Image 1 (tube, rainbow, N blue to C red):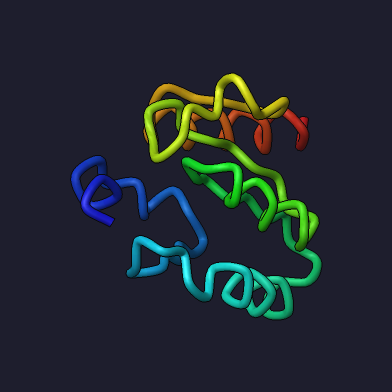
Image 2 (cartoon, one colour):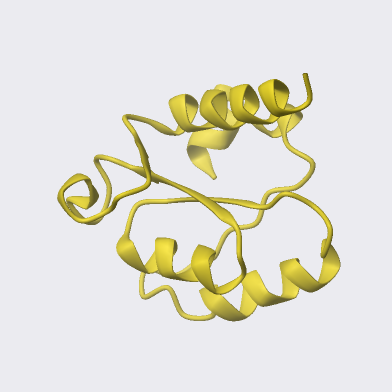
Length: 101
């Protein structure tokens, strides 16, 4: 959440959720809860591990992984990989904006 505050990203999102433990306990349950709250919305998960991609897949959400996180996801993940949190938010904005044109 520190980067979200620093870059003032929250103003570009409808809502932001995060877990507060390094073991990722409860991540999939939180994702399922969010999917229930927003069943018709386009959901995005921004993460830094293959587990984040698995959670996104479990709830049929789009996923962006940050390159320099807990894992070297660039070699493993076939989806969108960004250099930074800020770049990932820009990617989401561009994809959502361009899809509405």
